Structures are given as C-alpha cells and as structure tokens.
Image 1 (tube, each protein chain N blue to C red):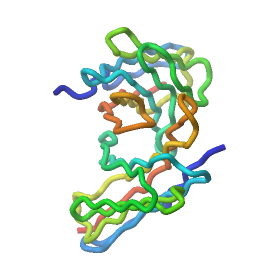
Image 2: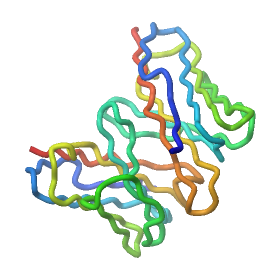
Image 3: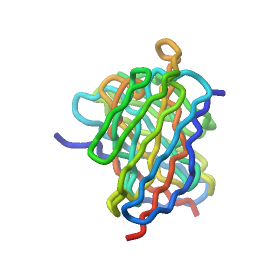
Length: 114
Length: 114
C-alpha cells in the first residue's frame, strides 16, 4: 500500500546544531503537511507544501518538497530547546475525490541538549 | 475562536467495557477526523466524517465506530475494550477535509484499559 517513510526515528542534538528530518513516499503526493507535537501535547500544524520543488521558510525552519513530489524535508538551523518534540509529515495521495488519503509518517523525535 | 474540544480528557476502563469519546470541532469546520496514537506507532487514522457522512475509514476492527451530528460534533465508540486499545485518541477538525488543508487537533482523550 501507499506509505510515507520518515527518517530518522530519533535524533539527539546539542543546542545550536542543525537538524533535518526526511519523508519519502512510495507514490507521488498531491501535497505534504508538517506537524509538530510537543511532549504531552497534540500535533500542531506547521506548514503545507503543494508545488513541485517548493521551498518555504519559517524563521529557523526550512521546508522542501521534492521535484517529483515524493519527498520532503524539514531542516532546523541552530536548534533550541524549544524545538524539542516529534515532527510528523503527512502526505495526501494523488487519487481523485474521496479516494484521496492522508498518509502519516511515524515521526521524528527530536531531543535537544542545552 | 474556540479550538477543538475533546471530552473526556482521561478515562480508565476495564476489558470488555465500551467507551464513547466526544469531539467538538472549530465552529464552521465540517470535517472531523479521529486518530489513535500509541508510542512508536505514530498517528493511526480511524475515520473521517464530513457533513454527517463517513468519508474515509482506516484499518481498524468493527469495534471502532463513529458518527457525526448535524452541528458537526462527532463521537467515536469503542466496544468490547481490549488492553491494546489503551492510547491517546485525537480528534482533528478541518474546514473541508483532512486531505486538503490544515488539521486542528484537540488535546486528546487518554484511554487506559485495565
């Protein structure tokens, strides 16, 4: 079936280091969304990418959508302790109408040492 | 505006019992999706309702059911509870559907089955 693989599963960094998480889909996606879930919290929407090759920035966060619309990445520059949490990607399949599905990656848990 | 409200926040049940969880979406949102979250398993999609109709369903047994009312509030029910049903159940609302835009999650209902 259609899958979205997210790597790495865990990442432990020193504060100030960069961090990247990757999502790879087995099929072409219509769009991809990114969410952040703080420990004990609920997922919070970060961004949606729709266009092939799209790059969007939010302060220290850079999101990319691959040219083939099968991969995406989230890069955090100079991590801070406030970046701690699990980052999920969720891709929408390219099927028509109600056959479109939102497929979630398993998430990357980020720990930041102060 | 008020966010997504889920009740109850915490509950403890015993095997064989049933449980009903409630979700009130953001005003004006017609889509409500339900997810089960357990450690290491990410977000497992249960079902999505739109305008009182089930639009999509995940791969869960028939013990898991849901419905949506005319005011967009949704309930999910789990019958004949098993130990493995212990999880955080998250509800997410969106304007037109989970595949097309931002999902707003509630705080979740944490179910413990003893």
